[in-house]
Figure 1 (cartoon, rainbow, N blue to C red):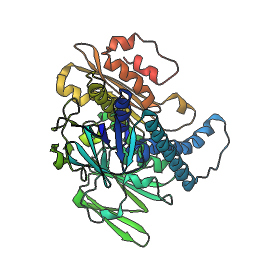
Figure 2: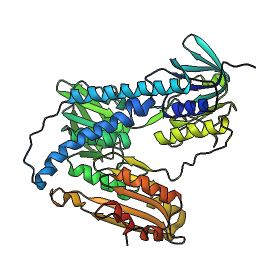
Figure 3: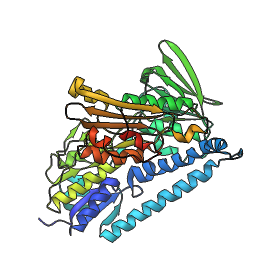
Figure 4: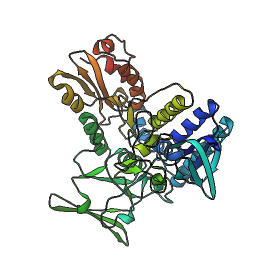
Amino acid sequence: MTFDYDLFVIGAGSGGLAASKRAASYGAKVAIAEGDLVGGTCVIRGCVPKKLMVYASSFSHLYEDALGYGWGKVEPSFDWRKLTEVVDKEVRRLSQLHISFLEKAGVELFPGYGKLLDAHTVEVGDRKITADKILIAVGGHAVKPDSPGIEYTIGSDQMFHLPEQPKRFVAIGAGYIAVEFACIMNGLGSEVTLINRQEKILRGFDEDLRTGIQDGMSKHGIRFISGITDHTLSIEKQPDGLKVTVSVGGKEETVMADTILCATGRKPNLSKLGLENAGVEIINDAIAVKSDSSTSQPNIFAVGDCTDRLNLTPVAIAEGRAFADTVFGHTPRYISHSNVATAVFSQPEGGTVGLTEAEAREKLGDAVKIYRASFRPMFHSLTGADEKTMVKLVIDSTTDRVLGAHMVGKDSAEVMQGLAIAINMGATKKDFDATIGIHPSTAEEFVTLR
């Protein structure tokens, strides 16, 4: 059978873009469909614009910190509209850049949403396109709980386009998105409350990291209301704003807000794909895939958040490239989802790679040894700010191997990227001890822990 393309990709986000360009480099005839701006969640409404807002929010603390170093007092002003305008301009520039990369790679772009009609046919608008191989890389979307008044909340997508900065901001949730936006808005001067189900934020992270970030956020003035459920949360629209009512332990609390962000979770974006037409299996609301990213239909593959394996942009890119290398480069390659470094761009920032202490103890019990330090970073020795940095190593005492590293403090992401290489190579505590540190730096604490 003759097909229009060797590969048709549905979704021009991180995974789809990486896979299509890599496949084209092997000589494959490739097309890609996208119904939104090219770039996906990360570039358009996620990692990139969020990190730009993180940078913007960090300046307010610097004005205060400068006083301890002899700088005169500054009365800063902040322009919300200017920030959102320049962030949107940069997002659109990056989107156009990705389009140009596709053109240079020889990948044809179909504007519109792709829908499977059968195992080899995709419909985009009024066109029907056939392909030998199909890759699904459609990402995910936000989901909200069934709480009274939840329709008055916004999702993270809308955060980048608010016409005015909310003076009173509430974030519902305790994952990356809720925590990071709570810190952003706090740094920009809003009054912030974070409402979450558990006592601590960032479920699944190491306990010391969770505690360190939450304590730091509290010191920066963010209020926490913890221990709620979907059924004990309600929102009412009133003349002076949105009234949030929660019940915790039988006690009712209320908080007024101008804007409420609901960031309680995300699910794969599968509703309009027509997966049933192609016999693609779904398990737990995600596309079921094997280690090579193939689905139940042998010629259809899926990568990124729509598979709900490890929902991180670099993982989607790695999965996309590995797929192309395997299928079109004829060099079988598989992605490991263990020991993937990640960071929370909160204030204070957190970084992590490998096993948490709890995970390690569940596997190895008493063989786990912990090295930890908590201290005031040198930068704040003159500012007087009550800031703490935490560094931690999780060790298998039987083999001396480093199983995990965790950090709370400035530049955690930058530090953790380097440590991830060492941990993936099987570094031991003795290897860390034998490494001479860069002085004075926070990173050197990882090679001086005793």
